[in-house]
Length: 470
Image 1 (cartoon, rainbow, N blue to C red):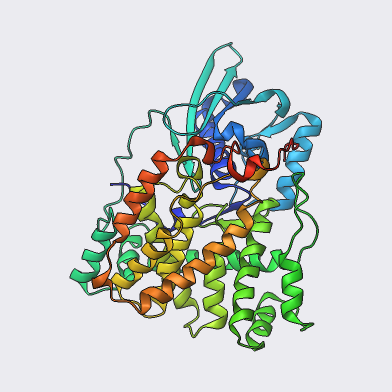
Image 2: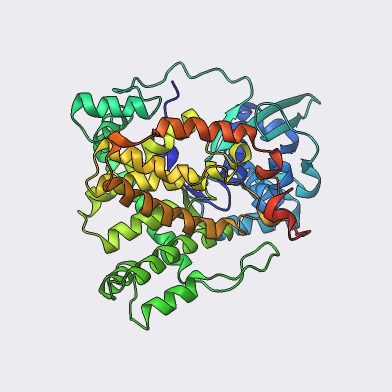
């Protein structure tokens, strides 16, 4: 059984794509680890990109990720400004600090090759490192970015040192059984498993760090103007929406800003406008190579923060305890989709990203509103049911149109799905979450590759563009 922690589903990193940015970045770090003993003997590195990584890699900033990864930078710690500086220097000087240790010749124009007409069989997001050493020998390693920042190496042996979890959860039925047998809520079951990896105090601290990163991202996105990079000239909108809703209110910090939002009129329209604003802010930051939380992917990074901020500001809640319980519940729902289907748009279309994020948010919100485990899973099922078949067709390969707006839709659907589940009897439901997970995977397999993050069809074909590399 694949073991997935909540911290695998929520990871702090740099935008714009978990599969095309964070995945290749992590693959670079893993490759550097594998040649650590011979690092000083390396004379050349060529990176080959295949499938979706090649077709939309330029718009998704894959080249940037490779430069930063080969430089040995940590995606969870590096600032966006430092990342930009390294990329600019590498392009101008045609060299980088390999693994942060030594100056190394690297021309992105000739060392990163995009093979648009070739795809490797295991996964559409494939990359191969061709490393040359001083004695003329070569070492080739193939990695696959399988969505959400997860990376696997070709022919990699399973981890035999896996932690023994208290509760085995392969699907939603397993989770429900454990809740029933132990008389626990979803978040309690998940916490018991997380404690097998690390102490509870560290879990709490880690999840609150994730929440702080989400809030900071929303706040930054609401206070930046201008156009997004990449050549489409997409205008930021969260700033204008924030200005309209704040009506000149004064504040200096994130917490003061949140308090001013709470003081405003409590109307349905205003609240929903704020939810949209939160989601837009995150994904505008993501599209501009800002710091976001993969939740469960970068392309869908705005859904869960928007719904959680909605709950934190507009609903009765218990502060940090609520945040922790929300994220534990959401993380487990996301892991069920990863185990039973995919969270990679290159494998399943946007249903695998926005759809999964919406299901995670819906279930977690339902649990915080007092939903029983069956209602929690029902909320997740309803949210995904109405994302089935959603394609991934980004214009120009950029995570901008329609990706940014789709996060607002995913957040709205999550809130609606939660409310429906809370006032429904799960015993009368015709479909289970496991039914929907299986259907999503079947739909993904039937979907044409043109609609799986290749920018070859759908909305991407409506606006022919030849954009520069991000």
